[in-house]
Image (cartoon, rainbow, N blue to C red):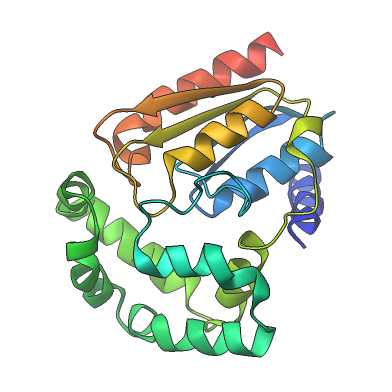
Amino acid sequence: RILDWPNDIASLADALKIDSFAVVGHSGGGPHTLACAYALPERVKAAAVIAGAGPVDAPGATEGMVPLNWFAFKFGQYLPWSVGYAITRQVFRVAAADPSKAIDRDKDTRPLVDNQIFDIPEIRELCIQSDMEAYRHGLLAFAWDIRLITRPWGFPLDEIKVPVHLWHGTMDNSTTVAMARYMAQKIPNGKLTICDGEGHMLLIPRWEEILKTLIEMSVAA
């Protein structure tokens, strides 16, 4: 479950002897970040969600999404596990085998602003290495992540007590501004920054701003 993730984060923080901390998640990491904010309010001082996936029942959640993501959020919760896993293996086999090839293949489906970020050699290499690590043990866990994200998350957003700041680009077609607006409205201490003309990779140009904001939120808490 997504709500099992906070237990892992708490164990990691214990091992590192960190009593309180902020959490941040990008894309599919958004729901896991919010789960930490919900389940660990005594330890999480602030949370940030960047281009985060939202609940499947958010109004207009899938409008404007790339077809693959649209299908996953529209129908993922109804697919039996065996079918969802088979589809994931078929669709992501190229990415698992050669992340660089997958980045090039998906160029036509990304907004221009995201392609410009992928054209930065250091960022491209970072993304390739990240994908290689993500797929190193195969696609089973990746498919399960998709299953969890595209189904009800198991906790109510309106019971999150931690301050949450969301950033979302208007050109993002992997996740949507509608999702971000819905989450910001539901979370009592939620704040939304809409980034005009930016896409799913806005964490790269906004990273310093996001970290600074998290520090300020943590101190205020």
